Length: 130
Image 1 (tube, rainbow, N blue to C red):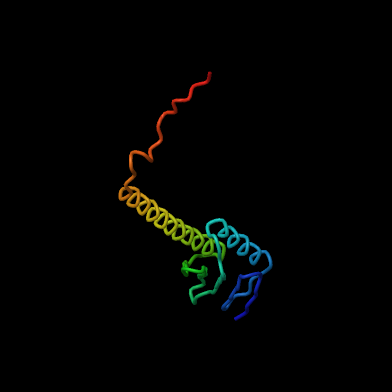
Image 2: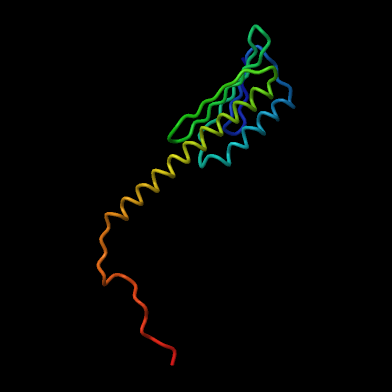
């Protein structure tokens, strides 16, 4: 099992040797995840080959509040990484939408409970340009 650390990315390889082109491809796909997340602590990518010759790709992203994990098995390393990244993006977007919806619902409930006096309302100004 080899390990390479680039910035906050750890790449694990089991029963397979990755060439530089494949490593660059994996790093490029993982870097695209930066636009979906505000802050990440660590990325981990594991690539291995099973006895049937299929490639297994697993991605874990640790953020300050949550750990995201996705994995997939495919005929190629690139295919398994692509499918795992797509699944990870769905998870992140779903969580972001849930959080945004909770904020909006909270803001609506606060607005409903607020009581403003009529004096606080804006009224048309009686000033005219003379």
